Length: 123
Ligand SMILES: [Zn+2]
Image (cartoon, rainbow, N blue to C red; front, side):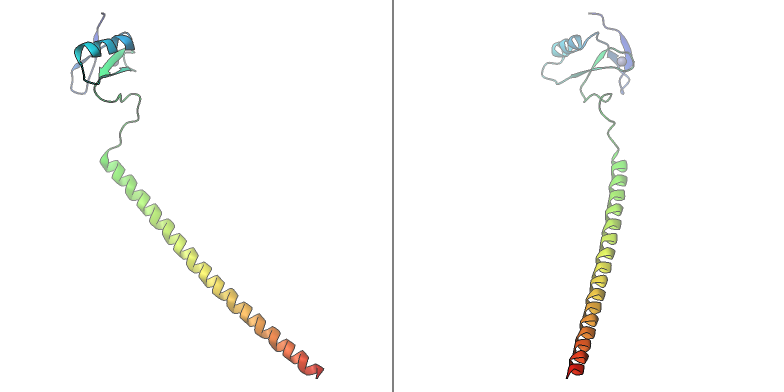
């Protein structure tokens, strides 16, 4: 089997290159029985390597805990701002409803007075 060593892993160890996924998987079965090695095509050397981890080249990079905490804080602030806006609009709605009710009471009173006057004129 043609195996050339080009790429290096994070630990500095040379990675073994395989010509195909089948060759990589065959080697995985041969060298690491029971260990779940995954084959992936390398974007650098265009051959197949084996990894114990989920292939990073395919998946998105995992964000750091600090980045996630920052994101979480930003979402928290956003939710708080939305809640504040909601509370404000609820308060405004309540005020508008009270004003409308007061105006309606005023109109009803005026109508009552007018009808009382016209009733009085008829007599
Ligand atoms: Zn490579």
